Image (cartoon, rainbow, N blue to C red; front, side, top):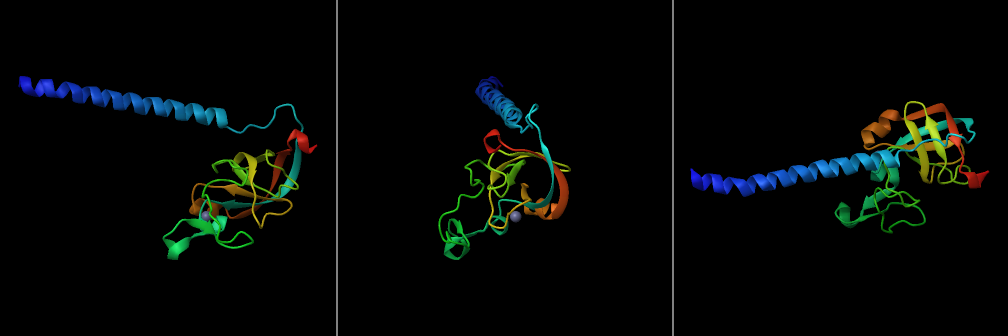
Length: 167
Ligand SMILES: [Zn+2]
């Protein structure tokens, strides 16, 4: 009896430590989400533009990559001028990590940092590009290919805030 109680205490300490760690990382994760939330600039004027919207995700189909060495190796770009070069899956062309709110656009029209409010999706920011994305066309990031294809292709009126250096 006494042996089991002395053995139990360090284990309980370990469990408490683990709980504290989980709570702490959960708190940090929540704070991270709050601070990185994309909001339209409150004072700046916006334009309303009809846009063609499509969904995309990190998969090879959506982001033009495949695995080298018969599908077992590291991801490489599947086609185009940079075919065969290493691909960092989930990293946008502006260097950010793709997440809900990440938009791919024609950056000659809507440069990186352009904020867009999209009905049925929320507020996003242009952080990515894509070979097929030209003109009034946005690609909206989704966490899975199913969700991306479910969104499909839609034509919507969106609100656009261009970054100040684009005006
Ligand atoms: Zn996909």
